[in-house]
Structures are given as C-alpha cells and as structure tokens.
Length: 109
Image 1 (cartoon, rainbow, N blue to C red):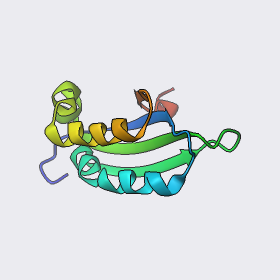
Image 2 (cartoon, rainbow, N blue to C red):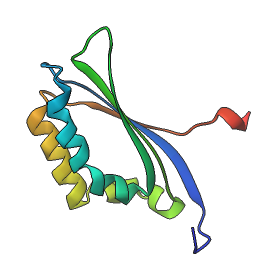
Image 3 (cartoon, helix red, strand yellow):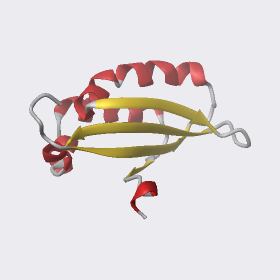
Image 4 (tube, one colour):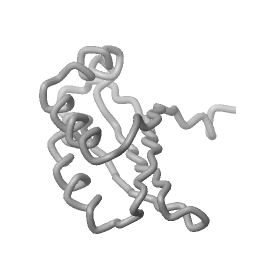
C-alpha cells in the first residue's frame, strides 16, 4: 500500500444451506457482492458446494485490508452497502447462515 499502513490478512467463511442446490441462482448474488469485496481490500472469493449434500455451500473470502479498518469491523458491518448485500442473501436463503472470520497462523509457530 502506498501510504505504508500495515495490512492484515483474514479469511471469511459464510456457510449456508440453499435447498434447491441450484448454483445458477447463487451466481448473481456472488457477483452483486463485488462492492462489498472491494470494501475489504484485496480479495479472492470462492463459492464451494458440498459434494455429499449439494444444498450446502461455503463462500470463502480471503482478503487483505488496512489494519485500522480491520480493527473496526463493527463499523464496517453497519455499512449500508454491506447491509443491502446481506438483505439480498437473507431474501434468497432460508434461515441464517454462519459467518466466521479467521486468521491464518500457519507460519507463526
């Protein structure tokens, strides 16, 4: 980053069930999330479908963002763009999904 501010890497997992298992219906939601991913900073997004239960999915988002933004994730969570994105997911998905944010500690041992 040009300003020299330190960055942190995180991995977000969004686990959910989509009863029809129809991936074609999920693709527009993933594409509509592009502005949210841009808010996170540099990111890589994957949508994984469970091979044993095609109605279960995990969206994996690996991202890197400024440390000052990461330290205030609550403020980011209340952003109107993010709230609109989450509303779209809730309209399509029955029930709530599980969301976890991870830090890779593989190389810190």
